[in-house]
Length: 175
Image (cartoon, rainbow, N blue to C red; front, side, top):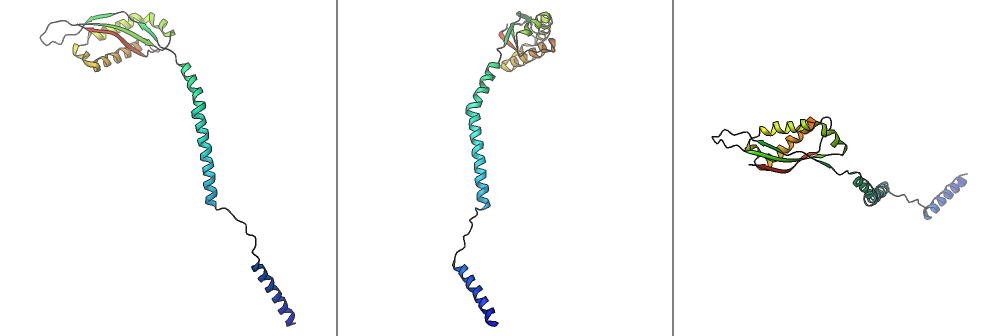
């Protein structure tokens, strides 16, 4: 019986050696890092393609519609204002005058009809504010900028809840 067991063992050994001699077909797997890098690259490429399309094609149609929605401003001329400025009290009794031509920049045409009834209130606020100015308050561009901002604020207060875009100067003369 020993011979039959030995023959079986030898047969098994022979089969094992035969398997070792024949290379088994190995399945080749891609590393996980390589798959992740390729997927990331594909996502980035798609994102760049979509962004390029939006930038070159879709952005132009939105810009064209934005341009058509811009309304030109409406301008409303106010009567000329001539006032004498507050004296500085520095010994010179010379009276100085301020002549201002002002234009209001309105956001739309409908506001022009709403401003006309309150025009006396607007002119009153201009007169009372400008009357208290000293010639030194109007020195330089900073002085004129402050004057413009203050007049804009006062007009907006007078016509509330409506508002204007800006007060524009056509002419300013200090004499």
